[in-house]
Image 1 (cartoon, rainbow, N blue to C red):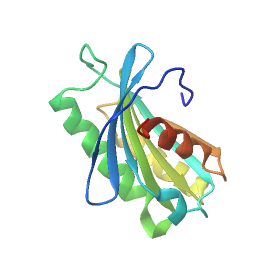
Image 2 (image 1 turned 90 degrees about the vertical axis):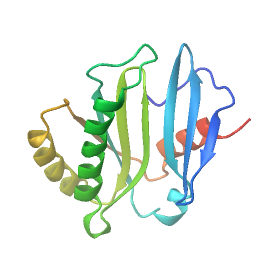
Image 3 (image 1 turned 135 degrees about the horizontal axis):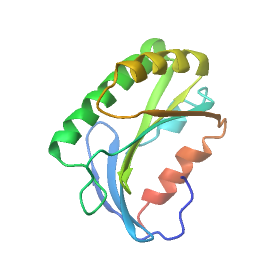
Image 4 (image 1 turned 180 degrees about the vertical axis):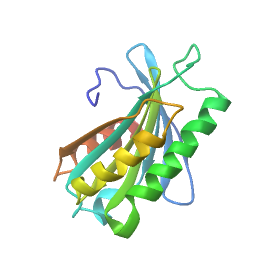
Length: 153
């Protein structure tokens, strides 16, 4: 999921809260990436990467969601951030959408806490089928891959 064969100059926009938005051509599809700039330098103590993903229910011809599904995904994102980031145990660093799927990327110091919170969210979410992956990533290599992907050439 994190290895790409082709990168082109992304379309970027910067926002005032330290986030960037990029649209990148990936082989034969587009990937939209929202990335927290400088997250790694401020949160190096969080050594586990957390990915929460879901297939889109009704993707358009480009593999993205439409407005109604976007509202549902926005509510899921708000729930994930609220639950995971309690007491500084987690940092939300990236979301991406493309190829008929949506993913949220976090880093944590407490994977067991995240697993417990995810179980509650998974059970309560009826609009989408959420999947969780947690892996050790003390060097933040997954985050770095997204940073490299979204850098202008």
